[in-house]
Length: 356
Image (cartoon, rainbow, N blue to C red; front, side, top):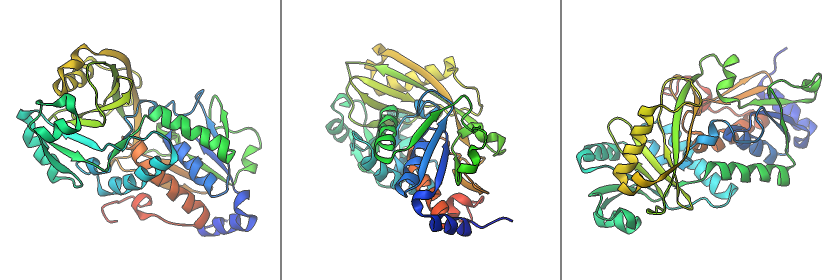
């Protein structure tokens, strides 16, 4: 006989919150933030991961921009709502999250793009050339106008996930198993699990048939000739690019959004477009060293919006598209409330977000 989420949560509460045994499948940003959300509620959490470490899937190549206002330019309002919550989460959960805001710029010929961007979002200040130079002295004299979003931030994804992993293990006694196939459990182990939280990304297509892959390509450059404090978006009619400072002269350049699920390979065209936009920001990038080239495939549903789906004793957290770090903590908190409290969140559990 099937039971409702409310009945299941009541049964778990009767056993005591500490007795809920949760298996998190996948150790990317979704899996780790879900593990944190459930552990904070007192669950006994085990993470299983196919790779040799945490955060080594598409999270490895993320930009780490925490920019909910900027995302309103092209995403549904729910992405910004999730992002505001997640922005606070990252500032509290991990160290060294720069709170410098973000800057949106365009070459003089593309100023209409900047004005279009401003009409689609909020939370910004218009800057003239002097205002831009006051924030980023190395950009002095290069741009006539810009948008500054003072409440936004950015982080270094690999360091952030490493810090979150350490917090899970040291403070919450979360266990992590690295297996050849993280979704397969040992014989009889399923009987010891109250709930599975599936955060496998695109690998979950065996259960979520409407998932698709969206390829993202990125570069890491090294230069001692330019310094930036905050993430910068360079607008272009064809391929907007962001430049995210990683410290010690390193900059992450991203990212393309290509409708295929081809992992690993970066195309020559993408490389040229990313480098051209970066060069337009400052010619010093023309002499920068290319330290890393990477690509992976983000999981997305047809409308590019994230979902929580509950089937039996499994909750699926998926479809984060290119909003992984921006949306994952807020989704994780909702997933824990679904499990413990029988909550229902139409903004991520209803299929038609427009009705919500």
